[in-house]
Amino acid sequence: MTTASIRTAVTAAVALLACVASALAAGQASQQVYRYVDPDGRVVYSDKPPPPDARDPQAKRIGRNTIETSDLSYTAAMAQERFPVTLYSFACGTVCDSASALLNKRGIPHTMVDVSAGDGADKLKRLTGGLDAPALQVGDQYTTGFNENRWQNMLSDAGYPKTPPPRTAPVGKAPPAAPDANSATTQTVAPPSKGGYPQ
Picture (cartoon, rainbow, N blue to C red):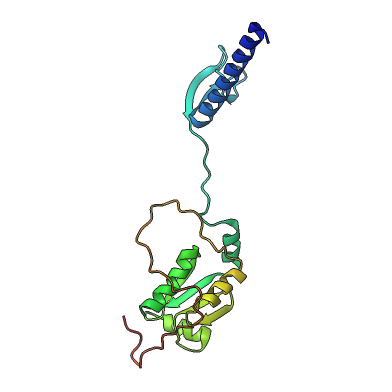
């Protein structure tokens, strides 16, 4: 290889690297856009400077376009539309906290019905015929008592993803840990005697 051909190859490589760096910088930086009125009276927006005969020229800088989207994946949004999730619960301690933590850990959007307040107990009784809480409703299916395996299977059968979407906001206080996934026991909290649920 001659010195001239080496020099030409090095020059081409440097030019290529400069083009790549310029393209990357242009993609990350804001872009210059021009607005002007052409001789025919039409308003023109262009990334090229206006011609000398343009009227009312204006230079504007714009950033990259962004589109606001849902935090839910397409799969989760479809599952939510077809099989909405409702958790019937109250302040019953570890059992109810674990039930809520399971839904939050999977990132499942859900409606919370507090059966100790308002007409929550009536809603639960209409659904299940009883007052055993926590209860999970997925679409028109429901189960009473917290059983992690059964709840996980109901949610998966409805099409909800097993993992939550990536976090986009700072993490707050972590929910209480759910019981061991291998636990096959069902935990139900019986309602207190007449007088309603404890607050």
